[in-house]
Amino acid sequence: MNNQRRSMLKFAPFALAGLTNKPVFGQTDSANPVMTPLFFDVRVYGATGSGRTLDSPGVNAAINAAAAAGGGTVVFPAGTYLCFSIRLRSQVHLYISQGATILAAASPLPGQTTGEMGGKYDAAEAKTAYDAYQDYGHNHWHNSLIWGEDLHNVGISGPGLIYGKGLSFGGWIKGERRGDYPIYEAEQPGVGNKAIALKNCRNVIFRDLNILKGGHFGLLLTGVDNLTIDNLTIDTDRDGIDLDCCKNVHVSNCIVNSPWDDGICPKSSYALGYARSTENVTITGCTVTGYYQLGSVLDGSYKIFPPGENIYRTGRIKCGTESNGGFRNITITNCVFEGCNSLSLESEDGALCEDITISNISMRNLIYGPLFFRLGARLRGPKDSTRVGVLRRILVSNIVSYNSEASIGNILSGIPDYPIEDIKIANFYMQHKGGISPEQAKIVPPEDVDKYPDPGVFGPMPAHGFFLRHLRHLEMSHVEIAPMAMDGRPAVVLEDVERADFFAITAPTSPPAFALRHAGDIRISLSRAAKDAILGRVVNETL
Image 1 (cartoon, rainbow, N blue to C red):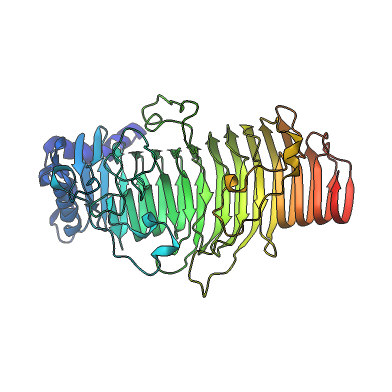
Image 2: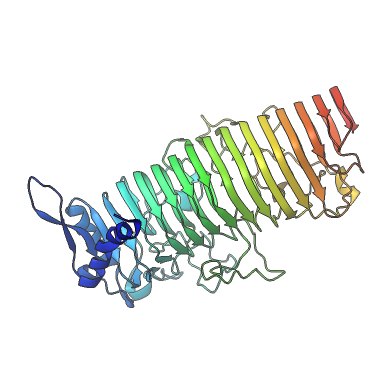
């Protein structure tokens, strides 16, 4: 059978479901030949796809019918399906056809009890004693456009669109407007808070989806194991993809535009009521950006925000900040960053973060330096068990960054008595705008051990390349730092760093490229940035 014929047969049942407006049946047990549906057209169960009637009752009826039959695929033919909460079931897959849109109905406005057509989203779960350890959105799943809990073998795929038009993007009313949409209060009963939310599920697939304006999260996946996310395009006003307390995760070939928040974000919060690590995660072949106006990536117009507009341009890949359980065995590779924040690794709430590789990353027009690694002590968790975490064994290689803003470069920082350990950085090229005054070299950044971790929180940096503080066992090789205009700061500042090796480092030598403060066991060799040196204890020296 040739590939073309095989491909046609693969999708024939979907075509049949759309043409017949009836369920497609198949034989599931050869010993007991009872015909059971394989594909469930939502229109058979009452959905119209007109965009003028409330279709969530029909959609949920189709899902329930598929679950009752032992499983199946629920098909959305072309059309617009106006919905409040859609409740997933085990063994059920949603297929959103080309030309189909699941449209989030308008939530209740402040002071109202119902939203569009008198409907509302499912109620959020009751508050718990551990809600205080993470933001409101992380603690609730049911108040979503599409949600599921304690499920297995579920998925959503298809080239159609999930449009979270009627969802809230956060927990406040007076926040800045993000696009031409009403502002809903997330904690108000009946308000929808996220596009897709799963809790305690396994064997989950998301593939070939488009999500526009996903609310607080395009995907919030908490305690989800054996998870595949492939070929999604997300154009949204908060986080794109959050992987919280998940194990065995593959994220690939996704495009995420999230100007106001993170793009792809592994987390390990306390939302399950206990600390659980996020581990065995691969993120590959993805593009993240905070550069473009909401919706302009999906429609292909790629409209850049006008100058002066208050846009965070976050859009990054970040591990954290919620970090009670930890991050282990994480691989981030073959990704593109454009017009966004730094690639970030953060342990703030006691997380054990170890065995992380970052490689083959191309970056352009970042608002800060390419890397932000932070071990801090926010310690948002149970007081009797939450201690400062660990950040160690991190390999970074083959990174190129062009035209980043110059004031805040790369930051790798632990806190006093809790250093980041065992870092290797190789084949790293950073070209930034430069042009910063020598006065900024005198700045001593605050420790801020318990503050929210973000490069901007620490303020301007005294180094134009790397600010390294509270580190143990660092290796940097074949690194070039190239300001586009003369910069009055050292390329590398070391503060409380022990055993650091620098090999083949290229950077301007005026002012001196290295500034060392309370550092020890430092070696520099075969570098254009400074002469070869082997140093023991150094209190304050430039090279």
